[in-house]
Length: 284
Length: 299
Image (tube, rainbow over all chains, first blue to last red; front, side, top):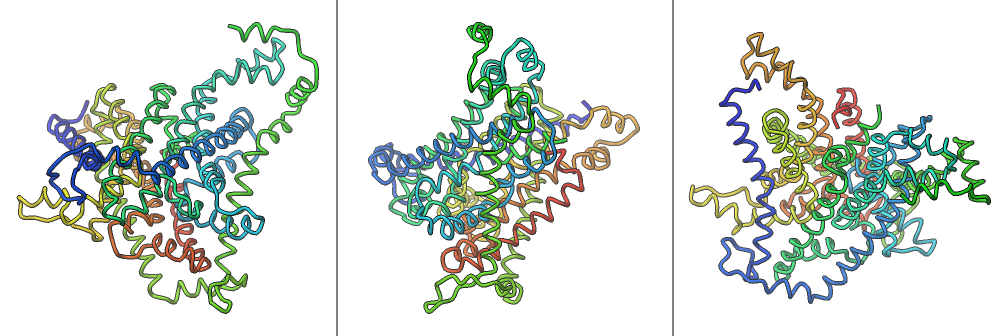
């Protein structure tokens, strides 16, 4: 420990200040969910829980929530299959173009969301629409799956790096065929990483809005419903409640995922934009 | 362990077994089979879309009503972007904002990252990593909206500052800068923390042993070693600011690259597509520079 006592105290204060800054807006929005008044003025004069039932009984909110859940589930399933396949391919073999695959998987979240969104919208309007596929839940799912692949890919690659390939070889030596080896040896070791990845992908998809606005047409996911209602002062109390709900809906899967993946894997398997991190790190 | 019993069961015969044996023997084909779906998806859907976007940037709107898309093949949109000062100003404003946000995030992120990496006990460190990661995952849209409420005329910030006779920045460029800095801060803290953690403590002790005061050690040893990590974090803060259209719409009435693309997306896809090439080009150059600085090892 070479830092002086003063330096350490300053660092501690700085860290505490930054943490307070990070949580301040989340706390503010949580308090607003209990604001009785429709106007968003501070300080809040009276508190109530009535907006929770108003929000729950709002048919638009319910439809939007249901669409979000369906879209996130669809995107998670597709990303689970595609990300795992790509992760397995990259992990146990060396081949020309391996870096290209990592790059390709990361690209949808490395490029600004508006570029991805506009590109997908151009494809939907100019290619899919003439083929008879217009904006639907499927266009949302396709967009979300594209940028969720990286999360599963990343988790699969990180886990495969930590488990030994010797077990697979031992299984083969003992007479198991390729499928049996995958089913009984490789997959059980991967399972928790994939489950954690699937939860992260679900969370990522559930509150995504930047790309979704371009791929949803007239449909409303829950974040899009919020976005449209920011401009309607009378709806803001319900927006506040939905906002609080969305915070928990995106954080809880992540917490569970961290527990499943285990403390040590936290840094390696952190996902989202941070996923870029681990995947690039995976490449020497 | 039922699995062992299953593994020990007599080898299955049949097409499945033959297929799996085939793939074990032909690893290239196995690789191709594994990659076919994910690669096909990303190539066709994603790269295909990006390519179409590039094509669309050469089209133009025309027709009788001026709303049809004409599949022309010229550089008129790019000429517009260069000739019209509006687009230049918007691009300049957006890139300046990205630079300012990146600088602010680096300054804010350093103390907490340093504390996490070099002062905190392992227990506190893990708790802090979770504490920084959690808000990163909390909905982007909610955080953006929260800043709209905080910065409002009768919002929390003005209320907090009122006793000191001050008022907050409100819905302005400064307010936008503050909110952007907030939104991307965790993306900067985590790489810097990882980078600082990788600096061997012995180097810092050596500097102290050789008479370097803590400030000097920081400037001459710690900061240069951590710099690639700062660049790694700046990739996110820079890219995310460049492409955002929601926060500027909520907090500022000025135009940014994202808001222009967003507003043009329905009425003039070709110009929007051409303008979208600006963040793509800037990020390509940025990533190239970051790679040369060795930032990718710190991501």
